[in-house]
Amino acid sequence: MVTIRADEISNIIHESIEQYNTEVKIVNTGTVLQVGDGIARIYGLDEVVVGELVEFEEGTIGIALNLESNNVGVVLMGDGLMIQEGSYVKATGRIAQIPVSESYLGRVINALANPIDGRGEISTSESLFVLFRYSRPRSTEFSFG
Image (cartoon, rainbow, N blue to C red):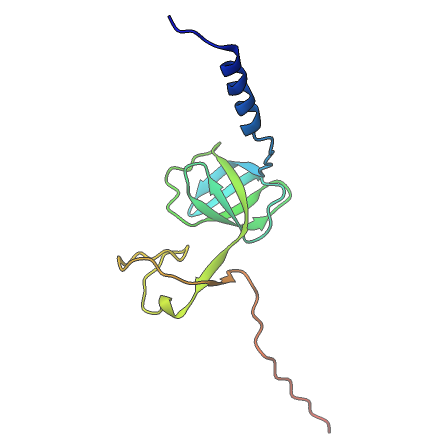
């Protein structure tokens, strides 16, 4: 017969209480209304911003680009074959960025800058926002006559 001591039970309960995590994580979620031709329409995602990465429940990543009052248009960064109407989507809180370095020269990458040429990972420490507007220097000529 197994004997259980009260102090052992008490220690187990105290350890469980000490390890309990009270952190609450709020996640911005939505539901797929429609998907096709590499675009998904999402209901919800009220706090998403243009260019933010979203993740579908089956793992596909997308970029929120069209923010309307009742839905969000998301461009899929994968085939999205497993995404169905009613699937859940969550905002990641990260704006789409692409890593940049000389290491990318001559490499074949996918839309998320992951190498697909079989030559291994690419190491880089710098990245640029995908939707950042880079302005060209403007030259304005004035004519006084």
